[in-house]
Image (cartoon, rainbow, N blue to C red; front, top):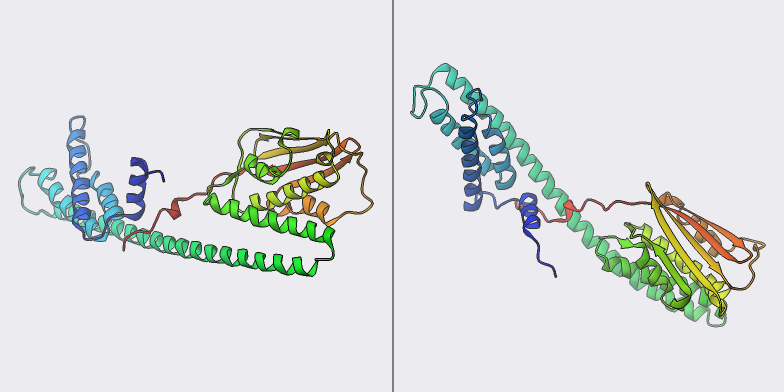
Amino acid sequence: MQRPGLTDKMHLIVRRGLQPRSPAAFAFASLCVGVATALRLAVELVTTDVASFAFYYPAVLIAALVGGSAAGAFAMLASGLIAWWAFLPPRFEWGSLTSEIAVDLCLFIAAAALIIWVASRYRSMVRRLDEEERYRQVVVDELGHRVKNKLATIYAILRHELRGHDDIWQSVSGRLRALSAADDFLARSDGKGVELRQILEMELEPYDSSRIFLQGEPVTFFGKLPTVMALVFHELATNAAKYGALSAQGGRLEISWRASGDRVALDWVESGGPPVSEPSRRSFGSNLIERSLDSFGASAKLDFAPKGVICRMLLPKQKAPDASFKQGALVA
């Protein structure tokens, strides 16, 4: 297992935060105030026309987000005292609390308190989202386990009931195996997506690889689409092995794809097999190929050319989903 890098560790700290009211949280708040003070002094080397509390607002915000509301309150009080001592006249000494200084301090405390409240609400919201994500993952894993068990039960029942109908059994069992294999494959991908080439290689593995040619750039799909694509490719491969290019010695299957804009165009081209003609009626397999992708904004079109079946697909070019909500919960 790859160890997380520095960037990942920083992301986890920002995401989860530090233990509220812990020494680390107050130390982090002190660091934020110290950095803000140093930046405020450095800016004075260039100009003196800077608000006394300008650099302390982000310090309070960051301290509250990472260290919790107590750390944010500590940063607010420390910032107010340092700004009063270092940047409000008379500077570097505790002067009398004039009405002007009192107003500045009150405005800063009010704004900082609002910042702390917002940061606290944000931490609470993220914590709930993380808890819901963990619960969803547990439910999905349990449902996946149950679905796998039910598929095994259905497989056994159908095998018993169709023991005298070998053709129907071979068709049904192949689809069940394809569905189970696709689910297992996607589960192993751990939500990171699956490359198109991997899906094709998984479904075409049982056949003679010397007659199968894949060409295309790396394209990754996410969510439920890869499972449906696996079923479609399984159907195409099964038909090619029974009636098409993979059923004849000199048959050849070429699959190429290319990405353009927000679409991926894929061509499944068979050649060298038995002569092909348009079927008199649409089978379940043909409907599965041409209609199962519709709900994903994708399409597939079969062409029963004399030299071999051609299937042209248009698939959506997907982006990786934001995984930030899966990095763990904040510590309340």
